[in-house]
Each structure stands twice: as C-alpha cells, then as structure tokens.
Image (cartoon, rainbow, N blue to C red; front, top):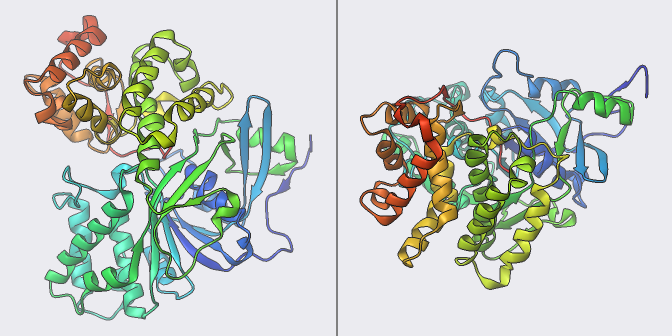
Length: 490
C-alpha cells in the first residue's frame, strides 16, 4: 500500500491526436470502445474526445470533469473469480460535459475527426414505437426548432444549445457540412436491433424536418452522401462501480484514480459498415467486422440482454439484488434456461446458441461482478419491447407458449403493480398506465396491444401477473417512477 498515491496523469508520452468523438461518456464506453481503441495496433493515431450526457445530479460524480483532471486516463478493473487485473486506459484525450455543444460542433467540423461513437442508452435515441424519431418529444422538437433558426445565419454559435443526443449529433453534422470537412462514420453502440439503420433513418428524418423549415442547402442530402452509419453488436457486462473501487485501485496500484471502471474479462464487438475516413484497427483487440451483424446482435440482445431483463424484474420481486444472486435461484435459473431455448429457435444454427448460453451462465454466476438488478431494470418499457417481444411474437406465430418470455413481461408489469421504485424514460406514460382503471391492461398496451389484447399470450401473462403480485393485486399505483435512464449497455 502506498501512503501517498501518485495522481493518474500523463507524464511524458504524448496523447494521441483527436480523431474520434464519443457521445455518452460513461462506464460502458470506457470498458468497451475506449478499451478497444487503446488496444488497437495504431492506438497512437486515434485519440477520443468524449462528451457526457446530461449534467450530473446533486451528489453524483462529475465524470467528465474528473477525467479531465486525470488527462483522460482511468483504470479498468477486469474482475474474474480468480482476482482483479488493473489496466490504465489512455485513449480518451479530452473529456467535456455534454452541454458543451460548441466543442462537439468544433470537433465534428474538424477534418481529422473520422468516427463518432455513441452510448446514449436505448431511450436516448428518442424513437417512436414505429422506430422513427419521436416528433412529439418536446425536447427533440425544441432542438429541431433551434436548428431551423440556425439555418438562416452563418454564425456557428447558432448551432449550439441542443439538449438531446440526436439534436447534438445533428447540429454537429451540420457544422461539418458547413465546414466541408468530408465524410464520417457514425457508430451507435447501444442495445437496439438494427441500431445503424435506426440511427440513419432517424437522422435523415430529422434532417428533412430541418430542411423543410427553409434550410440553406440540404442537410438530409449531405447526410445521405457523407455519413456512413455502422450497425453494431456490443457485449461487456459493466456494473456500476462499488463505492470503494477507488480505494481498491489505490491499494493495488499506488495510483489515485477518481473514476475507475469495473467490468468482466469477457468482451465482444461486431461491426458492419464502411468507414470512409478510416478507423482504428479494433480487430487487434478482438473486434469482428462482418457483412451482416444482425444474427450476432439478435443472439446478444435476446440471450444476454433478454435474460438480464427477466432476471431484473423477477429477481427484484423475489428480493434478490444482483444477477449472481438471482441466477442461483433455482426457479429463476430454470426460467432463464427456458427463455434461452425459446430464443435459440429463432437464431441461425451456426451461431451455436447453446454454447453461448453456457458461457453466459458462467458470466452471470461471477459473484465478483456485482451487477445490480436495479441498474438493469431501468427503461423497462423500451427494453421489454426490444429484448423480449420479438421472440414472444415468433413463438406465438408458431403456436407455442413461451413461458420464459411471458414471465419477463409479467414480472415487469408486476414490479410496477407491487410499487417497486423503477427508473424509466417513459415514466410519465407508465405512471398514467398504473393509474388507469385497468392498470395491467394499460401497461400491456404500452408494450403491444395487439399481442396481448384478447389473445392466449395475453391471458397467460395476466395469470403470471396475478401470481407475482399476490396480495398487492388491489393496489392501483406504482412506486416512484423516475424519468430518465441510468443503465448502460450490458
């Protein structure tokens, strides 16, 4: 142990030149994309300028500010059953608050910037149920209005002030268009099926809204010609850091680090698409570049993320706290294994879903990675639609019951009916559903009214809700439903 720990700062080695921009600076980005970049063969050529999301809440650590004080350096703690491995990651060369949209614009207008990566959570894309941008979202509408006004003037300051991630990205891309800075690749790294297509379609639709307001030149046309949007599958379980992680790092390394990250040893990154201005050699760290990412993303989204959601709601109802605790519950383990069987029927055989599931079971049982169910449970209204319902629909179309999928949906509804405190970006809609005359019906209608209204699937889910809610069935209120998401991709 070192009595006077050394601050984590760059000494003599110069930082890599800034060529990547990241939106959504959090633990998952630092455990995943930044780690891959630091391990690329050409890492010395690719520095990341990272921007946070919303301003930190009172009492929360200001991660961009803390990283800035450490020259962007931080310690990644890879935690296995055998012990911890400590690595200083140096790929982030600058860290800024998300509201510094002037700096986002300046870096996107720089011809050296070749790639933008995003980890903004599923809710951060501001999508409507049909997959397009939610043009009823007040914050997104305000950003569009700001961009329309900016289109009439040449002042770069007019492009600043966006509050949503799509608005900030679109303003930055408009700054790049005006600067003539050339093509760029956009890389969404959130757990959305077809995340590249969704981002591309959303940006083009929003740009068309801006153009319709009298935009000088066509932003939508420029995006179609100059912005390559990559589809990805990302995988690395990254829980919130425990309160004493900084002390653990200090004792093990003798370094003072205010923002270490803890993660599992496993990692996976699959990418599909073209990088017109270049990219780091992520393959050196194990990334795969493929012609079709869809099977990989479905395997990960259903088998890993779907199981996480099932464990989150059913586990919280059973008073479990972490994934490792929940998976040791024999009833929940059987439910997860049943869910894996249901999902595997809709995956290509060459992906070997059985082997992937066995590996997942070992990862879930790693008690030293304290992945809390409350963290996973955030934004359930979006996650259930994305992670569970595709398999549930496919099983229903095949005329089969799907007990694992049905339990995941029933547990989400029951968690609200039991008044558990959940976080959801659609918190206002969830609260209205809970206050309806028939709250279970209203909650299911939020997910997919056609799937649950008057169908055998709906009947089985309702029975599941009744069993899970038990004596609390008469309650017609939810617990505290906070707007906004705190969970990161996992």
